[in-house]
Image (tube, rainbow, N blue to C red; front, top):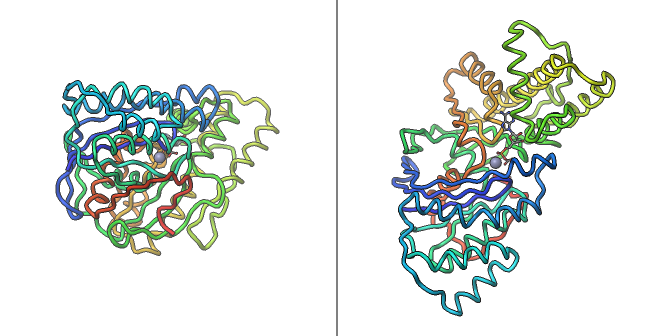
Amino acid sequence: MKILAIETSCDESAIAILEATGDDKSARYKVLGNALVSQIDLHRQYGGVFPALAKREHAKNLTPILENALTQAQLFVPSPQTLTNEQETKLAQILEREQELYSALSAFLPKLKRPDIDAIAVTYGPGLEPALWVGINLARALSYIWNIPIVPINHMEGHLLSSVAKKEGETLIIENVQLPLLALLISGGHTELVVMNKWLSYQLLGETRDDAVGEAFDKVARMMDLPYPGGPEISKLAETHRTEFPDGIPRYKLPKPMFDTEDCDFSFSGLKTSILYLLKETGTLTSTEKAELARAFEDTVSEVLWKKTARAIEQSNAQSLVVGGGVSANTHIQRVFTERIQQTYPQVTLTIPPRELSTDNAVMIGLAGFFRAKQGEYRSEVIAVGNLPLAA
Ligand code: KG4
Ligand code: ZN
């Protein structure tokens, strides 16, 4: 099955084309095309992601990305044709709110033959609704013109599945996943512990009561005058400090909110606020102090994440653990989890996706798309759901 996957939930516009074979027990994916444009540099100027700006950028980026992905997959077969009046009208209707996408797409589509694609997988949540709609409307437009069915995909399921996929050359493989599988999903908008007891059926064990971890990284970075996105910046600083002072313990003592509560929930806003007060009291920090604070913050976050994850492992009797979402790219969190699993739960298999799969991308949407398409989850109507849960 050939799947065209679209991801526009936040600040990455991405399209991938995957050829998938197998079933739930063992699936293999060949990535035929993978094109992505990150808007990070643009949003950086504003210190965060602005939904209206993200929407406009997606509308501008998607057609060139589509062409690129189809070309990589050798599915761009030039064949001049004209859209019928009816097609023109319908396309204009579907892309009514994405004028820029409409102009580019209506110029692009008459250039090529219908590509050999069986399903269009598109992220419909969670994420920024204006941004999600651009991807959804592209999916609807292509679905209409090429007569290809749509499978709507939960972005977090994409993160989760990309965390269990193994890479062999250009092939991604999902097999031998030992259930129950516990997933710690940590991104800019999410922090949750979800268990998969049955294949693709989820139960929520815990989540953040306030800020997401990535959000905390970004906000703390901002307070420290570091550029957006703050996660990688804090991580870089903290790692420099660890290299320079391997035995040094940061002098900053930060609170660990909800560390001892008898649940799997998180809270990060108190930690963030304590850093705000600390910065107010101390004034400008030297570069060493900054690095030390970054390290203290990262240490605290890692401890909290581990403590609640360990509790969730016990509670769910998990056989596998995956850490997914943008924050899972964090070197220190990876180190803490790898060490602790070996020490405490050697029977649990831990997987953390490689960097290119841990940040937002469309390949992960295609991974989920295959399983969902196999289950026949095609939809003629798709709407964006900003706060779509993975599990209730
Ligand atoms: O999953 P993702 O790419 O987008 C969302 O769906 O949110 O996650 C983005 C988040 C941002 O908050 C970013 O600061 C954080 O992931 N992040 C990191 C690192 N790389 C990205 N946080 C900590 N350490 C990193 N190395
Ligand atoms: Zn994400």
